Image (cartoon, rainbow, N blue to C red; front, top):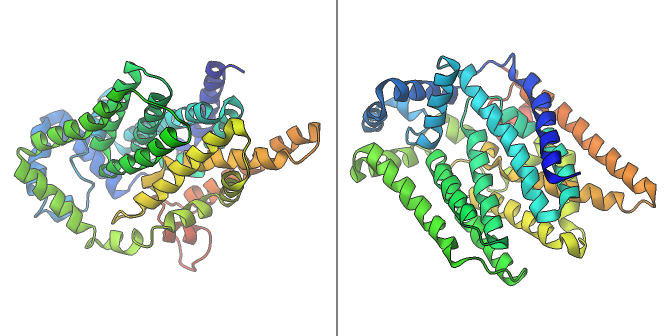
Length: 397
């Protein structure tokens, strides 16, 4: 199957699978309502309303509970979504997350195609469609699915820039990275991820990129920094806003109780959300890969482990912040299934592969309903995930 044909098929499958999950959701989370208010204010009063709230931020307790207002990379498309759908509500804003989740699946499959070829792209694409985390996050009215798409796009165009010298790829790298930085502050941690991958591209794969590759990597943070300072109305207000935001991460009750812990809690979260996927990924990461896919497997390992390690150093730890890493975990699971299926002789190998993927998909569907429907998990913190799995005798609310 040609790559474009497969992506069109995957698009249809993803929309068909994810669309029913969008209905009957009570979108009453604090962040969801806050983004609606911010987007509506931006639409009606322009950037001045955001600037005034930023000036009030250090003293206003309600604003301090809300996500940072400087996330204009998300607020602008959120505003456009509300305008296009004729109103500003969490239900309307959730459709932006829905589209971002669909695009994340497609881009993830395309990325894996670049790294390991079309067979792994098909297997990974199927597993991405069924991902409980992607499905659960992309039906909410938050910025996480959109931010994950931009982070993955940044890594995707970074990878492409090592394999071919294209001005278009460099421009798209700069755009996606700039938007990622303007959407989620933690996106700055993509730089050490790309740094470790660059060492592998250079040393192991002996690739040599264009010398202009550094241009978008330098321009993106400078551009996003300039935009945020302009929105704040000066560098003093910019530093004041971020000092307040940083200090709140050690004070806010929800953050202190639910979003702290060791860096490896992300590994536990991924395991709780999709245990068989995690086990298959361990097999995929650890087996001896064939020469044709060895570099792709190693890059998946670099991107996933470095995401867990570096994002695990943040003062706030919630698996939705590393949603983009689910792509690499599921690609590794596809490697694991293919490896195990290869142990079977002849035609049994194909049947074993299909059976293994089908088993993972069925467990994903069960986990999604267990966690995000029956468990009513909104923000997938470790405690709430374990409680939804029945580890704590605490009634759900």
